[in-house]
Image 1 (cartoon, rainbow, N blue to C red):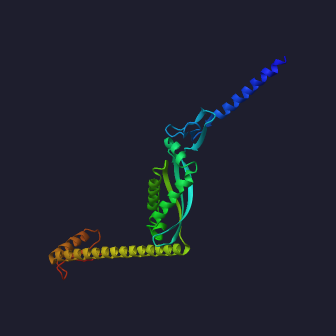
Image 2 (cartoon, one colour; image 1 turned 90 degrees about the vertical axis):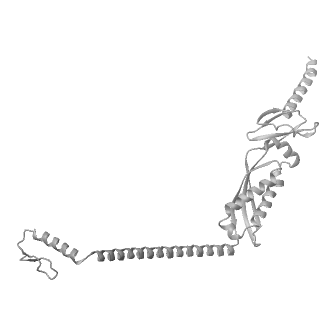
Image 3 (cartoon, one colour; image 1 turned 120 degrees about the vertical axis):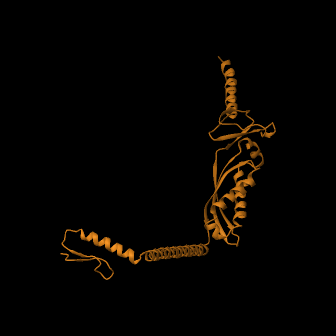
Length: 271
């Protein structure tokens, strides 16, 4: 009986050691994540193999796993940049990005877990300064917003293209101009709109006047043609036809043929 504690103590110690080893060796990668394996005695960060995917993994207890989120993420940035004429413009932008899965080990070795602050945000700021510097405040405020957004995206993507980062989109959410510049631009836009409206009314009035002139000329031409075609004989014939039609009415009357000054029939005794 005295030997049992001596035998049981090493077993307990062994079980504890095994539990510790298993706890150090077991790792679970969550959904939307991947793990970079670091081999303490095997060259450090593993870059030639794919990262550890989602699920349960067993590793050597002396190694480590650095977990990265590999889903699309969004980062926000507020910037002060200069327009083409030197005015300070505030830009509120965001970027959709994710690390390139197969290059996760290289990203960790060369950039580290704070790669957003080291690489992505400085690239967005650099691209924004370059693009905005080519435009005037008026263009930034109105017509060129979509073009500026696309140019910032393309320039940022070029900067991070070899940095193991996949850039999906850059969104310019707001462009804030100095109040005096904004008011001046809005006044100019209102004046341009009023000018366009005035030109539209003038054009409409000119077209209506032209339509009336053409209509009047048409009526005048028709009257000239009609007058030229109405001879005395035609008028007499029309008068006779009208008189004959009236003579057929039931009222008592006397028709004198050729009694009028123009030789047209005269109807007498109409009751």
